[in-house]
Length: 554
Image (cartoon, rainbow, N blue to C red; front, side, top):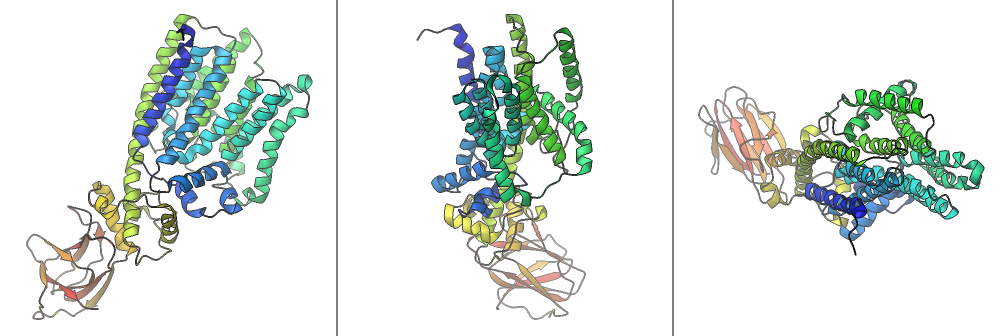
């Protein structure tokens, strides 16, 4: 086939898609399940209607649950890579669909730039790197497909647009914003094509309404009068954060609150440019109103349901906001013809925007890698303690686990899922060589899951009651650790001040498990239940007086 220069943007789109996929795989290859994903894995294990249709944080999540169940049935739960592949597919398809949408309005080179900005939108790193967020990317994929199918302006296009819109709604509540876009399109074309095509948005809307009546109305809602009154400011913040993220100017730290410092002046400038354009040539394209309505609805719905942690500038909200900004820009610029110089300038600006976004994506991946270590270590500790841990034991405390990712994980539910689909946890051997932070919290989880127990008997020290097998600890010299065997250990503390006892197992150079210690002239009975790991526990006694650490019966 003869090479044609006009094919270059399409070829480069293919390169961008491959690069995006390769980057995602490289960054996410070793990551495991995170946060809300555990709700799908543990709380929806059966095949009841509730398992598929129950809301998650007031949102419909039918298709994400279907995908999760399919992946579990085929690949099990030992690795998060299958869900990462599925997520990446929605990201790539969305980027390709955006390319087609913009190409129809501005030409291939601006379309390539728009797609690249979305594919490498590192400011939205949770969306690109956390597979659970396919409720966003899947909804965007279906919504973009719907908009392109409506471009056909024929009956077949309408029918498939209805299907794509239903897919968008099935992925998540973000799909409702695309329902509004379809409704605006139907309203605009009512004179040429009539109202019979209203089914395009009515069928998905009725499906959502049926879900809401059956399941969604029971979900917690955060709509308040205060949120409604504050929504205009939230909407402006939303568009501002989308603008500075698209242009690579977001300064919001990973997993931290922040402000769209560059976005606010950018938004003011964008509004001024639009106003100037309207003064020069009044009127918007017909395609502007559906995407503008969807973008406005997106930020309004987010504003109505605002709670701390759902700020307009939050990274997980930037992706959809960026999509709407790019769609609106394509419609606002559709009558402009770009010469070679303007395309070169735009290309340089695109490259400059992608660079900082890639840095933010790397920062996001590093944070998720820390969460992966903690997650695999903590559930590995849970598995080691399986013989004795209560089924209701929960990994809900950050002080215990080091991460909020496992807040909903309970031992009984986890073991049920593990028996069905396998384990993503560190084995004891892997845990012994895991990063220090993971080993630190694994010891704490183990101490509570087994659990280790301590009983103090006051005024029971006998100076001459030494027994065979006892180790001497404490005293004014350097402290030394004592290896413990499973079962009961007696710590006999001579008269003197209060002593501190701490333990470690997988940790090295530190003793993460801190006990309440014991007063002088006492005997402490420390029980260490037997579990499935061969690594021993070690006890450190910090005391001014001497102590004896002895095996005990019972």
